[in-house]
Amino acid sequence: MILTIGLFLIGFILITKGADIFIDSTISVGKKTNIPEIILGATIVSLATTLPELTVSVCSSIKGYTTMSLGNAVGSIICNTGLALGLVAIIKPFRIEKKVFNSKAILLMISIIILIVLGLDKVIDRKDAMALMGMLIIYMVNNYKSIAKTKMKSVPNTNIINERKSFDILKISSLFIIGIIMMIIGSRLLVDNGIKIAEFIGVPQGIISLTVIALGTSLPELVSCLTAIKKKHNAISVGNILGANILNIVSVISISSFINDTPILKQTSMIDFPFMIILVLILIIPTIIKEKIYRLQGFLMIFTYLLYLFVLYFTYIK
Image 1 (cartoon, one colour):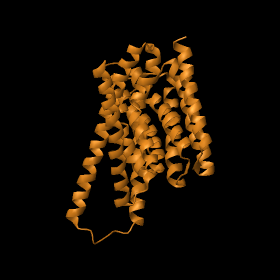
Image 2 (image 1 turned 135 degrees about the vertical axis):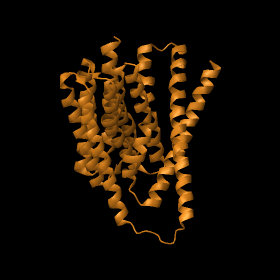
Image 3 (image 1 turned 90 degrees about the vertical axis):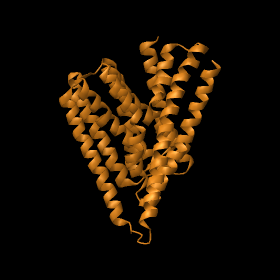
Image 4 (image 1 turned 60 degrees about the vertical axis):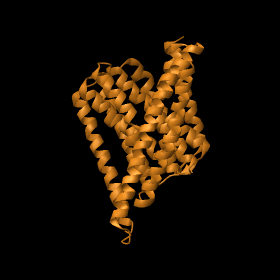
């Protein structure tokens, strides 16, 4: 048990320090390229922090655990929005960049609608997966255009030496990769050893699955969001969550469903999907209207997330 606690603490240190390096590298990219932080959050940050969900879902699909692939992705969206962004909104409400937020929010809603429509026949098959991959292409093109517009507006610095630029890019990229690797390893250590500690204390397996395991693949998003607001770069947080949520649908679900057809269980259509939609609407509608994320939204998102856990608990454990 001493070893388990030690590994748990090492995981905590790795994920917090990794997030620190990860966010610092992202901020450096923003300063050197003049790309708005919300775009960086929706692109490189969300791509990196979605790797655990993608890995888990693809491996689950290959092994034939296809329902786990879908549950992992949808559960991650619920956790990202309800817990991660809910905490961010409570700790530090902030204004958003209207055009960028609106475009990502609309893409997220369209992706959710497509997923639900495709799932009306209770399965996401290979054809459905290809349709979702089409949305992935649209999302990547949208990001490319956003970055291209930003670069056109920025004035290049002709005094920068090419060798120095190459060194900076290499250094920042290396630190970025080191940061995300530390977060992924740290989250794995936290989850695996957290489960052992919970079992040793006597926490029921059902409670463990609803808390520690559910949070596992979302830890990189959660920790990177909290680290970003600590460093007063809130836009990275909202961009990260919007981007990660879109990618959970158009890449995680689509790729795993392309490997094996993914059946949609009654729980997913009756519980997971409704809570996912409610949380996303709590985030998007007030923010588009007021151009700001409010503390009240954060409380509503946290409350909805806790309600989701209670519904799951009383559905499957009572």
